[in-house]
Length: 336
Image 1 (cartoon, rainbow, N blue to C red):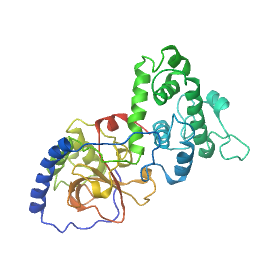
Image 2: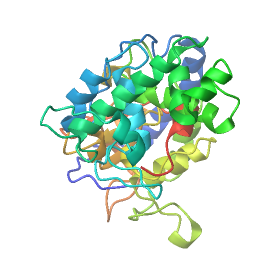
Image 3: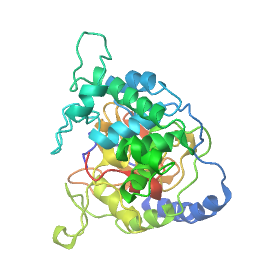
Image 4: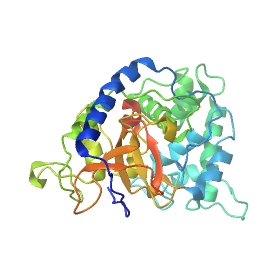
């Protein structure tokens, strides 16, 4: 939703770029049918670039390897789901801090992660190690239960270890089943891909929607509604483009970054979301997003006073990209 500070003119004739993009957009469907692979599995997962704020990167990487049931990307997904990496978060249910411990659970499972002599739920140096320790304790409680140890651990986190033991696995509670699936899907957006990432079959439709908006004047907070004259800001455009093909994204750019895995610059495909930031170590600082169309260009709503247009992506503030997936988008919390 935020605006890029520096912009470079595309320097390409609109008609020729549009024709080029149309070919690329149509080709996405072909590529989607031909590419194999996707995000690799396995317990050891490196964190995606900037997916965890730099202040917590080493903590998550270290404590995310505490036991076989967790990994750094999974731990990051839980922290994002709980608080959006906000160490001051507090819920109406009295959950506190970056890991959202309630006082009773903290009293039992909080640890002095930084060895300074206290256990402070508001200090990520204690709370992140405590979250990992709690996960591993839950995994230990249900270690003899059949099924996937990580899924059983997550189910225990949501419904309690007793329920997992009682039902010999993830219990038949819709809320718990949804929580397990949500964290496992969200985990993929925090893990660096280990192979080619499948393209989105909806990408061409999202590009086609954005193309129809070329020349529309930017509006801060714009969602394209009639009362706004059909105008958009950057994340309003990307949200509307993917909504037109049945995928609901969060409203702001830094949350849209977590809607799927992250292809490298040389692996970009039309339809990928591309992000920009002044802090290249922290996805929470992202302030602009566009839709990649190929050839080093994106469609985007750049800034007040400008219109939706093509711009190059290879600028110093280029942060990275996300290949939007339906499961990834559904996994995102409504507020963080």
